[in-house]
Image (cartoon, rainbow, N blue to C red; front, side, top):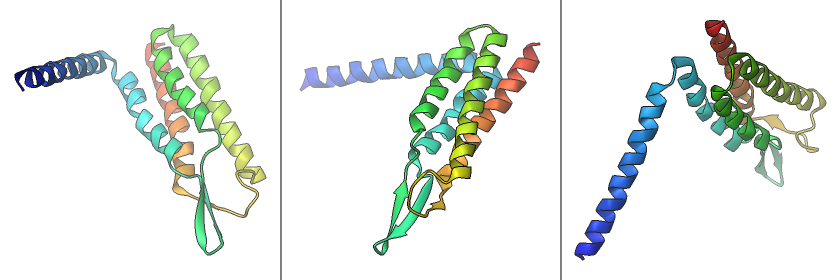
Amino acid sequence: MGQLKELLYTIGELFAAMVKRVLSWFLGLEFLNQAILINGITAFFAIILPVGKYYIFETWFEINNPQAVYLIAIVFIMIGTMYIPVMAAFVIRLICNLWYLLWLFVVSVTGSISHAPYEISSGYFFNIAAPVIYLILSGLYYFSKK
């Protein structure tokens, strides 16, 4: 029983050290980079929430975002570009987020999320908010460094 306690204590210490290291890294970032990381929460909701719903067979069915994998990639790109020159980071961020918004606009205009008639759901607005916020924060970061 003593070995189990020691093992759990060691695992707890390791976890606490990892949390402390991540928190220290986060607090060491500039404010706008912190905001970019926090916007990952908005992107997370955009990924997990349905973008549409339709009523068939006396029940509601939800439609997930078919391009959510690209928003996951955008989150990683936003984090990864913190470590490259500001101009290159701005261009990469701009292209990725504008491409995603363009895709969302095309899907909206063509109504191609589903072949069934559907209503827009809350996740759709998170899909707009995440890249728009990323664009705003990227622009602010770029112009603050310029």
